[in-house]
Length: 375
Image (cartoon, rainbow, N blue to C red; front, side, top):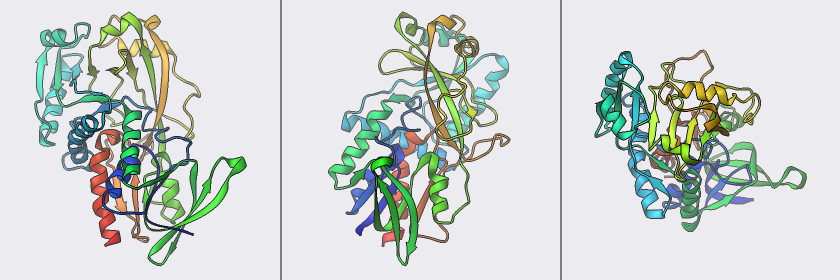
């Protein structure tokens, strides 16, 4: 039976960032990912935005870890040659009524420590984004774009260089507390040609994203249920992609479901419109009953009147691991906690946006919990 100090379940951006952080401090670190490649789920099916931290309640984990993660992500990308663009964004008020909400959003961002926020008028919007129509906008200079896929692989590469062992096609099928350790049962390989292995570890980190509730349940912890929420995108390519220069957002949904369907100028020169937000059945339901392109065009016209249905083509979709059912209102915080009955286990649940941004700060936070377990 293999022995490990730390076993991380989940090879998304958060899991890989944790692997990088803990492998700097401890030896015998393993990361297991059930899919063939790292970051195949939520981590790379998103807008790739390095968020500022303006949206989240003061002193929440999302606020603190996003603001810190924003800085750390830029530093990591620059050091490890991950493509990024530090471009800022506009949160646009479509009418005079929404301008009051911009002021509230600015105040919340400043309470969270986000710097450089300012509100501009319609004329200044046109200078920055000539095709966008709005009565006012909040300028958020710390926001930017990163290559999510390359960020995931860079965290993993650094972790591997520091001695971490990363295994894909490795699904956790059992977690059995055994004194001061946990025995982790793994199914390695494709289903038709798999083998069973067991690793005994002093610390398990559950960073399983959409499946974090199921992993927790393997330890008898049924505290959480993940509700998958699908976000869909359309893409504008060619000459019409010049309609958008950088990042343009509407005001976020009042129910906390999402930040709203926004415009993202990609690192490859197109722009994305999305994501939508729809509760779906199934944690692999990326394509069933996709929204028609006409619905995207209609929603986009509020801020970008020139957009036409023929400009758009259907893009990818992703799933957010929501912690609450459809009837819930408001933003729900990350869960990052040691298991009350099995303290050698650390759970990360509900790691949706701003998880990509917050990942390096989350990793530092988790490393402190690992020290409590191992020391």
